[in-house]
Amino acid sequence: MDEKLQIIFGLLGGLAVFIYGMNMMSECLQKAAGERMKNILSLLTRNPVMGALAGALVTAVLQSSSATTVMAIGFVSAGLMTLPQAISIIFGANIGTTITAQIIAFKLSDYIYLIIFVGFIISFIVKSEKMKNIGQTVFAFGLLFLGIETMGSVMKPLASSPVFTNMIAKVADAPVLGVLVGTLMTLVVQSSSATIAVLQNFAAQPAADGVSSIIGLAGAIPILFGDNIGTTITALLASVGQTRDAKRTALAHCVFNISGCLLFIWFVRPFAALIQYLSPKGPEVEVISRQIANAHTTFNLIMVLIWVPLIALMVKIVMTLIPEGRKEKPDPKEPLYLDENLIAQPVVALQMVAREVMHCADVVNQMLDAVSRASKKAEPGALNQIEEHSQVVSSLYGKINEYLSELFASGVLTEVQATQTAGLMYVLGDIDRLGYLSKEVSANLKEKAEKEYAYSEEAMQDLQQSLGMVQEMFNEAVGILRTGDLSNARKLQKKRDHVLNMDIKMRKDHVQRVNEGKCKANLTVPFNQILHSIDQMGNTCVNIADASINGTCFGYFLEMEKE
Image (cartoon, rainbow, N blue to C red):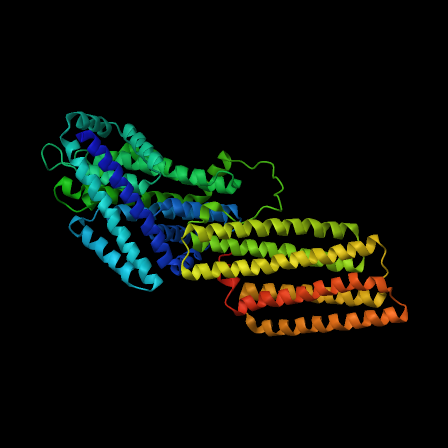
């Protein structure tokens, strides 16, 4: 095969193995450290410094600044986080992403196959899901270095090519050209970690003297700046179709990296000298990979230290670039919290689903309130409101279920998360059922008004009392879900029994009123239909409470509140 083709295929293959290993490692780390991830996320709303720290830690775990920025954008879009809080996380993410370059700088070529073998054995033999994830993480870690080694081996002939060395000399002497090259590389690959790994490998190729780097640290730094700019495209793509604050968050990521590039591009050589002073000493070709990693970390640390005290200025900049426009009324049938971009981060995605289920529960509560009002007086406004809310609940139910199905299909859920997802589906089904039963009662009340059925005053009072108790039960059941406090669960079962007893009593009283001529016999069927729906409503409320008893607690998902 032609040598040039071998180099191209080797680079592409090595890059593919590297990106696959990095993505696999990120996914397995999420599964192995899901609970810790959740604890880190709970820090997000404290203050800018804590936000930056949390952003750095989450990115270090996920091995992807893009994933962290997508999460922050999702939180802002859902209204769970303020713009300054999200921006502080973005700042921290830029520090966290430098961990990958630091790991790559270690010389592990002699141990790559041992790491891959150990990871495979652990994941193949052990039964524990957590240990399997750890084994797969080790395996992916080995693949990551295998990709790096492959790219490094095929790059060696390039160092002796006069044409290529002349091209590199031009890039090294023109920092702006280096920035453009780095930006273009990351735009194509969609991973700054991958392009920085390529840069580290390439810079480690010796020049003609066998000691110096083919590009040198001063030539590599502008490309590094370009890599940082290129990675912001992922955040911009994630913000498409989102709220203005979400777009501003993505824009803040761009401003952060572009401002850093504009600031440091004038001091490339002094900055390179500083990094060489801080880094390990030795032949340039041996230490330049670590120098690039240190330059990446130092650059982002300095920029975070500059921007954290200036978050208010950053907010002002992005709000000027994306000003407030005319506020459009959101479509009530559309979810408030679900974000397709978060499916790859199940810890966060399940938090959003729980909030959406609670949103659906709020709509059902409004339906119950309207039904209770309609039972006193069948006002057209209340009946129409029930119909509108019913359509909203039906739409939300379908879209939440579809989102949960996508989560299952993504393959990123652990066994615990899959159980939690099933619990969310179960509760959602009961909430939707309550909405359907409320609509049924509403339809019967509407028929009563249209056909001018004359229920006795006693019958209507009993109906109102039963509906009021069902709404009270539903609020208590949702409260149990939110808090996990099971002390009221038993009381709820007693209330359900009370509703059932009232149902039986109302049926008997109705028959008696029919016998006494106070109610018409032809009202028995529609009246019993209403009672049957109310009885099922009570059972459904208890089912929701039972879900809490069986381990479904929304308090687990709802810890991160907007301050």
